[in-house]
Length: 148
Image (tube, one colour):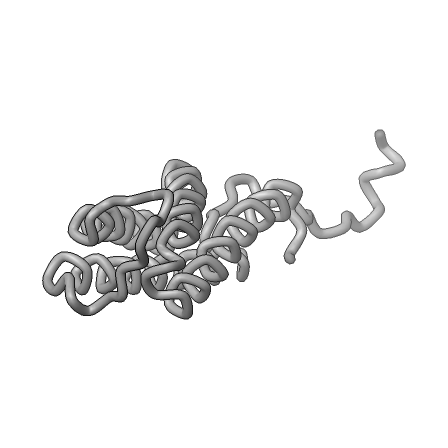
């Protein structure tokens, strides 16, 4: 013990309490959640407001009315924006988990939305999958004290 007193100590790599929004991946996920949620919200508004905007395919396995799909996208969009704002502002763990769940549901909903608006759905699937990846790996690196 006495011989350690004279040696300089290395800087700590772990902080006592870490703030979840400090990771670049977490900030990326939060920004993409706000963007993807806003896109899903506008997608839902377009489907609810004007059913003639989208091409309806016949004999589609998952037959909901476009108004029903619109409400699904509206709810997912609002939830994703709220979770994204909570992750960006406070880095709350519950917002991460909510973001992972809602982004996963959003990817599935947009996969089922492919026949109605393929390009928009593919972009939102990619955004939602990237959000899930960033939220999961950002938390892993932050918990270990590494910078991604």
